[in-house]
Length: 501
Image (tube, rainbow, N blue to C red; front, side, top):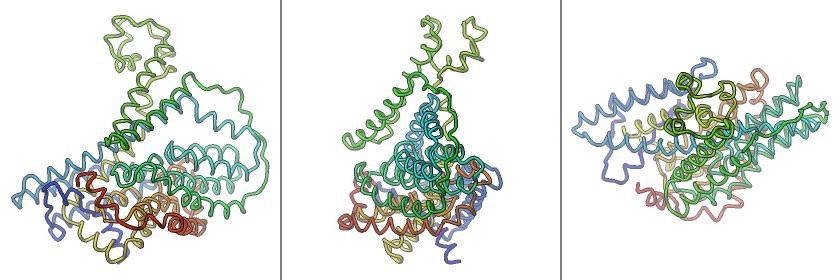
């Protein structure tokens, strides 16, 4: 029961706006509305955890729970004579979500555009057609997952490399299972030292707590986190050399490398907006998305090989994307089959992980609502006073494996404990790599379980949890060893002054 209570309390932070801006949150932790809100959140998150068994998308229960919780928050505040706090609090949470949502939407659209142009297919085909041994593929897929995930996020990277492992492994289910475990660990570890590699690191960066270049202090600990279990698991992989798979003549679609260049430019703009102009990184990302839309217009015109007419210009790009259904009867000479094969920026937008984005909305609103009911002081006392800062930050990794690193990290950021830079880097590391200890502990693990269904399973991953835990412990030790100078002073106060909280 103590463990359960700790898990529940961690998911009930207060809001950082309570310490500034003239808004004073009241304590409703013992009020019936607070108790009911906690019960609603527990029920909703239970459905999220059971997503694989119920085949119920995780966004649905948390979105409904968010609406109910904030209704209760508004009722208790209005009844207490305060008609402003609940509104200000929910607007604060919506702003948090809006920045995260638009940033991720731009990044996902770029990844989908590169996939549509064949960039990831080229890498996959190169790997499966070289006739590498199983052990070589094990190390190559792990290494590539580690170096690609800092840019292309851990979920996309894990799915790409798992496809390679499945193609090479064939009927060798033992190899596929171990290779998938290795890929999930590597993708999560690679994402931990980059603001773009994981949602948790992105949240920390956008808060201004850790600067872009400071994340790279986690490179060595992240590398150790992957290498320790990888070396142990590689001993179970044979040097068998399967036949090379004939890939045929594959060519990238027109503009593939230009889109890669635009993506690099977009990342540069996001970093520059944050570091030099002190603007939200999402500004650079959305500007880069605009550049991609312009290039999409060029690709569309190139595919159509049409000279723009007055009527075409008046339609606008969005209406042109619906030519198959909306303009067929208006006299526009469009070949439907050709239209299906041409580049369409809105198809890349449609293929974004909308369920994940809506899940973030529900989680941020649920946790923020519970925080507005007054649980901040309780969890701050328990985690960062009673347990101690280091112990609390190490515990975050284990909680991330059982629950999910997103609500856990959002809780920590909402509490905003006054910690040194080294401690903020520690909690960023543990939240990022802790989920690797269980297959359900990260988005990458859950996605690969769905892709390699029946082969990469919860139990298959659990057999190697001891090795992954060794890597987790080793990464924390390395962090203290090489970043010891960062554990003096505090970073929380500076972050609060930067964000105005």
